[in-house]
Length: 402
Image 1 (tube, helix red, strand yellow):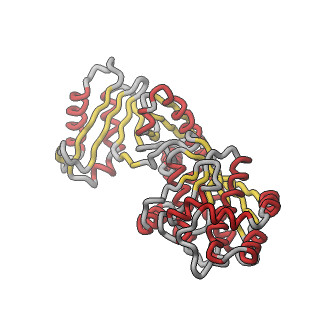
Image 2 (cartoon, one colour; image 1 turned 90 degrees about the horizontal axis):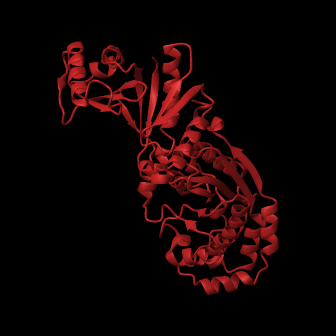
Image 3 (cartoon, one colour; image 1 turned 180 degrees about the vertical axis):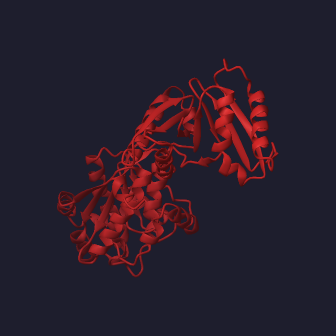
């Protein structure tokens, strides 16, 4: 019997008649994340996915499990995961396997308890008996241990399922949320700053498949700035899965704004034009929403009035998962997903080009629309969409250095 991985999911279990759909998407995402590191077999039963490495030796299996655990911790839809020893449905085999398998964990602990889950009611021992008997075996093998049923350092779990039994002790927390792809598709406005990658992570956690859109204004923005954004895409793929990245040429529009429009309205007009372009790209990619990294009041373009002016040109939902968060909270997540150090690299994006000295803090949508109407931006928008470049980022790019 080999070491395997047990996957548990949380809120997916509450999906009722739709649960099987969520389970199928999760299983498909897991297969995709693991396919490049080795061969596994998969089974699912009773709110658990069983992942078994297919290899010749226990040593190879352990290495595969090590690699798989790292990746699975970033798969949304997984509430908890654990390494487990597969056993025969026989108490003697459960006890014989548990003593050596749990050696490292129990040697380092002082207190423990045993929990049993017996879904096969034909198994001759009931759960309390399994707990008592296995606890006695482990205390005899590791006499320094004492039982603590309230706050044990280690909880040993014995699961008796339909075909096999499983022993595990170190349950690890998963990424949670819902499987990517179960909530549809959305287009992320990816600036290159701290906020927008965090917004992508948060919406992927709610099951959205993310497509990214970046606006570049060469020569005002450099090639390094674009490469920085591509690095952010690579960092997001372990969480979001494969990611399609669009880079929109925005120089002509920004130069026109600077030349033709009042300076204090520059930022809000730029945001509206970005929204119009983004919606066209979203439509081409079956995206049902736009995602931004805006946080209320963080900068002039993120006041309530400015957001209203931007939304006035939107004909699809605009999701702002960071809207009520402060910078400290956002930075904490950016560090967790390993995008922070890239985001703070000092390469300007187009949002910082031609920044007005005194931006309009309380713009009125009707007034902004009138100013925008004085310039025919439609041909420029059409050219920007037509000249947009596309690149696909897959998991193998972001995890090549594992």
